[in-house]
Image (cartoon, rainbow, N blue to C red; front, side, top):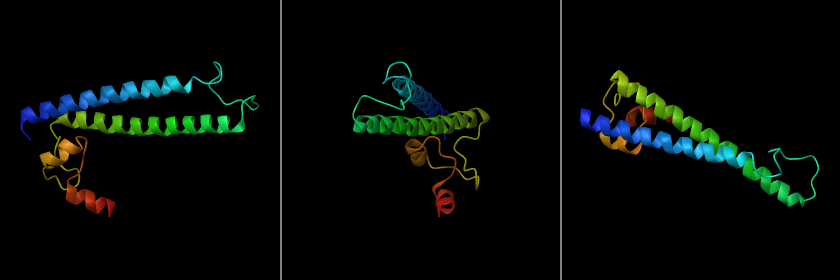
Length: 121
């Protein structure tokens, strides 16, 4: 991958990291809303049980989304470290160059398609 393309990928990764951090902050804000300032489900409630179920579902969904976001941010940070180390675009398994097309789709990829297939298979 040329230095120009690596610079583009770095900019793309940084922008995606910023977007994900903003999304994570929005999820954290929602987590504190609901029943007063408590941010937790009460043992008793004057609302219908279905309302409590809906609120619980939404909170669980937000927790799962935040976990996925944290994982993506970790992958992005690792990719940025590889860029600065000069190893970005090389497969961690076989050392071969990861095709640019794959990196455009998954800029934080650490394996070429062949090694990824073997790993998942």
